[in-house]
Amino acid sequence: MKILFVGDVVGRAGRKILEERLPEIQQEHEIEFTIANVENAAGGFGVTPSVGEKILGYGVDVMTSGNHIWDKKEVFGYFDQQPRLLRPGNYPPGGPGQYQFVGEARSGVLVAVVNLQGRVFMPIIDCPFQFAEREIPKLAKQASAIVVDFHAEATSEKVAFGWFMNGKVSAVIGTHTHIPTADARVLPEGTAYISDVGMTGSYESVIGMEVDSSLSRFLTGLPSHFKPATEEPCLSSVILDIDESDGSARSIRRLSVS
Ligand SMILES: [Fe+2]
Ligand SMILES: [Fe+2]
Image (cartoon, rainbow, N blue to C red; front, top):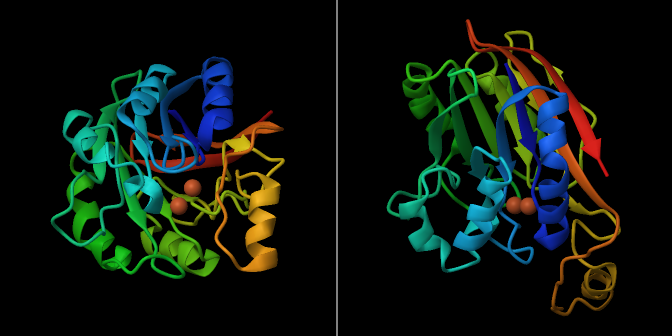
């Protein structure tokens, strides 16, 4: 079974290339299930109900997110209506939203998607390792494949989490930095891993935002207004090939489309 994971969709440029290119990618690579991280989909910060519904309409099965999920206040009510939108599970208990969704691939195979967030150079939340250890075994009984979006900054924490999940899930896919890494591989116990998929948005930018406004923040140390960039759009993704008989990954392959 082939699963497509699309990295952080940033603003209009990211949404546009997703809409334009997703159908042909799905057809060409016989994709049965599609996941996209949407934490930056609405103007670069967060997601709104209308943007979320559009993205699902493009052919995405489950939307994951990260630290930016809280940026648009409309999202708080949207969680109640849309179970296919996830937020990291290891925020302290009591907040809105769900961290996992079990969906059906085209063939009817059940796929669990889980969203967690790292803590190194990130907001201080509960431990993702302990959370995963507690919750992942429950999901293993419900689905043939488990894909984890591990949304984190530090490659050390990401790769450590990959090893922690080795043999326990089908894939640990890193998001958040918006910069693709070249370390896609299948770990020895059958867990596909990549530190970061990279973003789906403008690459003539600083991680999706206009170069001038980002530069000014570094040059002056003063706050500046970030606007999503539009030039050189690129869709960054990975294609997972999962053996549904035991949930292990046969392969993980990067796919960038511009
Ligand atoms: Fe992001
Ligand atoms: Fe993020």
